[in-house]
Length: 309
Image 1 (cartoon, rainbow, N blue to C red):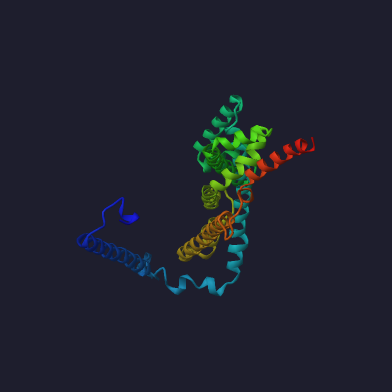
Image 2: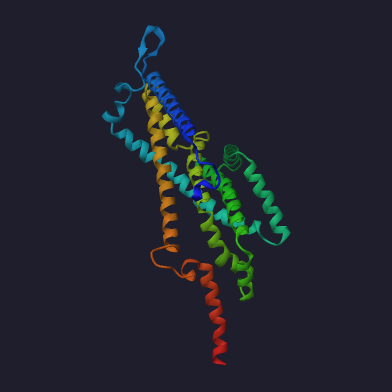
């Protein structure tokens, strides 16, 4: 018996035929829905005075992207640049706060752990947009700092919880081995446990950074000139409502490209980490695990005086 057939019965001819029929029906329904959507968008739009506006795919709605090259410079030079600038600063702040929150949240002292838990719950429970308004109106920081600080605080709290879960999931024997060699608890966390927890939670951290990149669009509400505000508001008002759908598609494609590039970079980092641990040659444990390397170095350093004696 094959391993794949242990947990379920192999489908018979009728089950395979039914699965094929359902797959064809669902595929036809999806194609029908896409065809209806494309036909609806391509149909002319009624307007006041008995006139009809061209469909969304008419070339008259896209001519500005080919006849005016300065529009691309404004979209990328202002909208995309401001979006990436805010996202990069907020990501660095979120990672720093995530590390800090995870260490404080796992502290043994209750007077450190309990207030940190209260702060984390407060930050996680407040909507990001409301936090932006609070920072903007309460501290008069400007729209850029309001976006960066709010996104950094909120995503830092989530990353901190992910790192705390990674620290808790590690075997206790590693910390005990580090403490038995004379390392302090903070040293064990920094050099033994934390690198492993960070590597283990890297997919969750990258997913949260992708959410952070998309949440920069909330800066539209507080007046920050990010990508959506530049395309849908400023350029849309300048060129008119005829091009709003075109700007929507361009904005969607740019966001998808940025998020897909970030996801590809995360997978590349994960593959490099896996190849380092399970590469062509059999890597030694101390070569792949920095925690074991530190423990080995500490043990060797303690054996030196005994050898001279």
